[in-house]
Length: 175
Image (tube, rainbow, N blue to C red):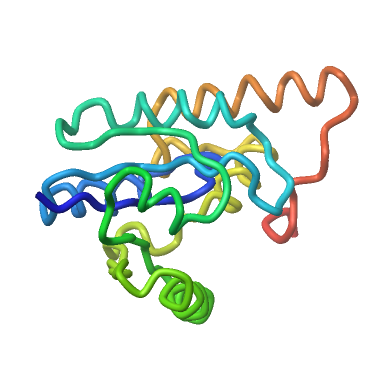
């Protein structure tokens, strides 16, 4: 039985992530969707909130497990018995980052393969940062993320704006 790991921060999860997970679930026996608890970036949702959103998004796929993890991805892969790490590619800049990460992971764990799946054409424009940015400006992200994620985004931005402490998630779409 082949267990694969699909790690990401999922802040928030979107249809592009779900596409990669579903395709991995068709290719492999078991997929562990791993929510990284402390990525080196500003997060909108806590680790537990992201875990809940991912679980709800994946509950319809029988051979997917969802868990939170810390530390090196290859260490977590070994811990759950994964022999493959699955990652998604959308644009050329993704390739460069994924290429470097795959080389580093190969150095750390030559026994674990990295498989990159190219995102479906309808998902190439979607990234978590794009979803956050559009949602922060009050835009409709219902074509980019499941209903429960859209609602969580709406609620979070209402809370942040009400408290007056809303960080700036706008990078380019405002202009």
